[in-house]
Image (cartoon, rainbow, N blue to C red; front, side, top):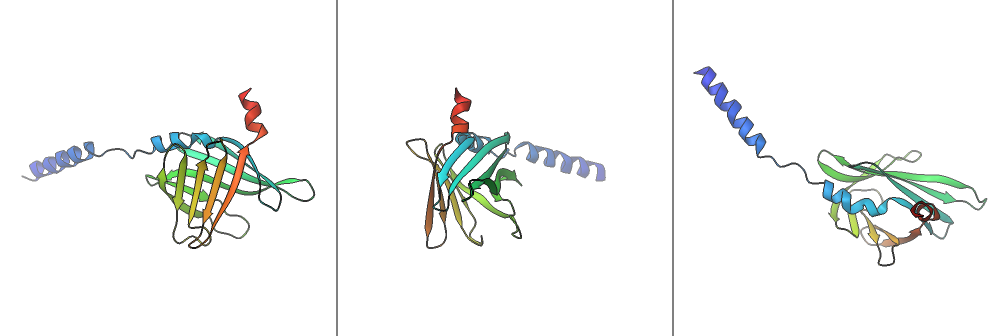
Length: 162
């Protein structure tokens, strides 16, 4: 009787696991591929550049550089879009004494992706939008304010297309 019960439990577990659908995040990553490349902008404090790369089908990475008054470009930030426990997150890497912060993908289509974290210490929403003229609009939103940064395709990206 014990063996029959064991076999029934095993068959039930197998039948349930075969009905489990995989997490469908590959389509979301396909929608994000337009980010790959170099993006240039100016935030009022100086010229900045973001470079995005795809490390795998489920991992994208970026580094943000700021050019100071001395004309030297320095990395000032980095982040990842990646799958963690079956969900897609944007993670801002720790800078100096900060702890890493993670935002969960809230919505995504071919032109816009938005990440949300209601408990983030600064921006609760981060949205990446591809504008009609092929620019990147980065929208950073707190509970009451929003800040937009506009990037153009960088020369590094454009030269790679030739």
